Image 1 (cartoon, rainbow, N blue to C red):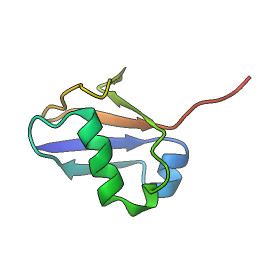
Image 2: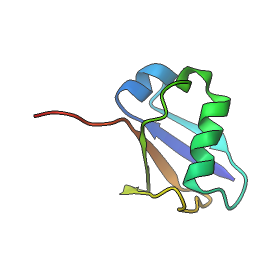
Image 3: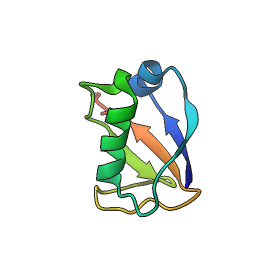
Image 4: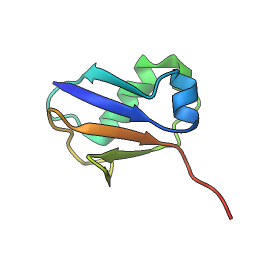
Amino acid sequence: MEITILTFGILSDLLEKEEFQVQLTPEMNVLNFKQYLLENFSKLNGYSNFSVAINETYASDDTIIKEKDIIALIPPVSGG
């Protein structure tokens, strides 16, 4: 299934793109998706502290990703 990935902040810098598509296996959950990213995008090695939002809603690790979902990779936010 084809999924659109949006990246923000340092993740855009590391991956050198703000939007791209990937092919995932059906019934993949967010935890497996994070592992997929770390295995397939070496520039993310050592940087696994990011959140995932699916269709503009933060997702937990057990959330199932569906065909045509739009996934946002969101780095930690700090400020004061």
